Length: 253
Image 1: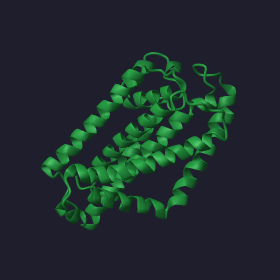
Image 2: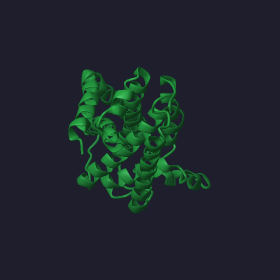
Image 3: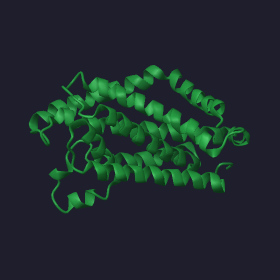
């Protein structure tokens, strides 16, 4: 295992995050505050508790994962797409690094950034609502699993995209709508049939509800089912990345 090579990639990617540290942290703080003003105060004041959880606290896991999805995909896709754009991808491919070590460096850095932003949002949420986490250790592990999964997904997007414009296509047109439709700010049990049954085909539903369960011990989907769906998504991304390095798909394009 070439840990020095992995660390070099990781450190380079984290240095890029460090250059825009305050901007990167200020944006989620401001965004979270606005969400709590609009959803927590204005809308939440008109709603009863959801599953015994105050509405302001109920939306915290959804807010965190919404940012994780965005940050993880952006950082991972941009991290691998930039070497392809500048031509330095050949240096990476010729370095004494295996495919696993290369992915570990890029995905590890992107996941670290996404988790930092998520924890900043959690800290900001504590300023607005009383919030207790029923399973804090499991919450961190689940957050890491989701961050790594979407970073691998972002890595695939970064290889697939032919230009910087395409990096935003899937996050904006697919991931963000699925997140809002996946129960980030409401319980899917509030939906009438057949819309509730249709919503269960949305994979984001399982990620959000599994994460919400670690906070409150209750969710719209059983935790085992949610964890299984999350692991299946991570496995699918791993297979996709293996195929990319196995075939060389667009790595040198």
